[in-house]
Picture (cartoon, rainbow, N blue to C red):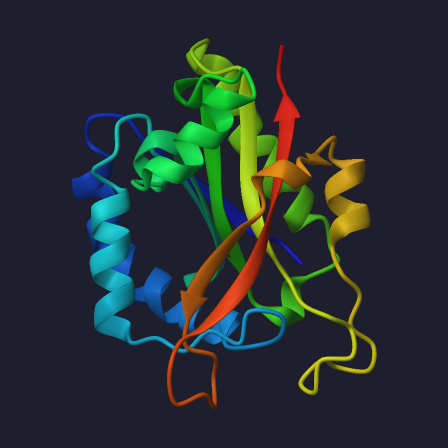
Length: 203
């Protein structure tokens, strides 16, 4: 299988990525409706969110194509632009970290039939290479949802990605665990989700 990777960053990112926003939004809806996210959203909301993300300084977007079909997308942007809430920044500061030193890895989306072929590893290496090239950030991080394996919608053969993330050099920082509210697929209203903080020191 031959896949094509395209990278977007810099002052022209917004205009260059604009034609791809609808496809990225549709990809996110498709991928994150499955376990463990069970995310219920709309195309309009996803498009608006992506447009806001692309306005962040140092935003980086990696797209993966099979011929002309978008099959994967991965985004990185400074943590201070990914999380506007003061709580995350304050908790990092109390532990001796500078929030401005973190590059945040937004959720990567990859169609199911393209998984377990090394693309996930490329998502991390490509973003880390970009972050290192900036010589501005000391850490990469992301938040991952925590779901119990006895959840009623957990597939029989589901395997959490914790081991994969550890192999990529990331470790959990339990003190940074947060609760986030969104509406699960099939729910009538939003409910609380536990999100675990993972980070990697680039120094």
